Image 1 (tube, helix red, strand yellow):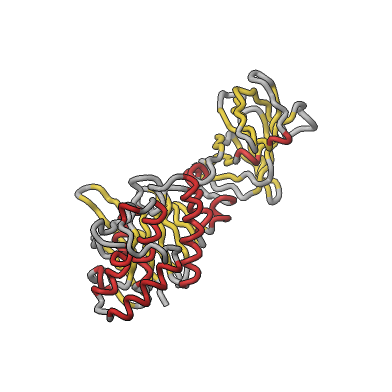
Image 2 (spheres, rainbow, N blue to C red):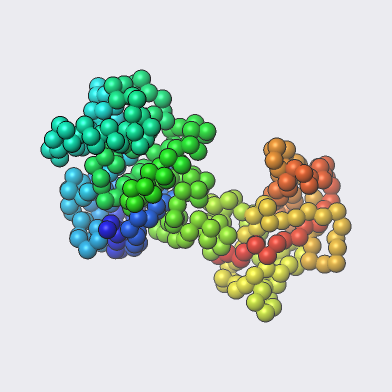
Length: 350
């Protein structure tokens, strides 16, 4: 088992608080992602779990063992760094074997374990190559193999895909997720990329200034954001100021610039915004029977499988609307349209 418990952990550098009394439990076998922009504290938190940084307050538990001040090499964790941190003067085999040699495995055990791991990551044919002779994706696989061959209880990954091109990043997502599931290992993944987080994770902690803004499954974080920060960071939702709100059964009637619409309740409080993702807003040529909000087309972008429209509401608020290409009416700039909002839209705390 490898459950990680973080209890009221704090880290400061001078007067700046990087992690602020953060508590979190990561379950055994979970692929858990720390997500957020640069400076939110995600890498600092990962390095505290690894043992490279000691917290100023709180404690860290691996199962029931306090590891807060335990040296990194005793924590039974494997680490994959953003720059891979491979030894340039060692072959692929020797890079992967490094942790086993430090742990005094026999030559025969090392040969067997490294060979098996290189086959698992698709590099069984390249044991004699050096890192400088490998592609970015191959170096990434070497780094993964090195971290996994020691059979750690926890795999830690600090933005491991950020140096790869877009196509290779997608391929490596699948490789990492498959290896993690095969190993049944607890994995903690740090990224600023929402698509990586959504596609790979069992759960996601969205960090904001050293605290957890929202902790949820990928589906929950995307479909049910509770703050404007979460709605904007995941999926770039349109955020529209709510001018007034009135409960109506399980829904809420809200006034936004240009009209009144109904959205699922309950309301989060007086300081509220409407989070409407671009695919949850529909344009119409006519005003219809009611509940539609007038807007003006600013411009249209054609993106192949969809078209994205920039629109302006009555008070100047701008928002984006996505339309599948097959249904695109190709409205020109200046066209007056009417907007309807689906029940997937949410009220969030500003």
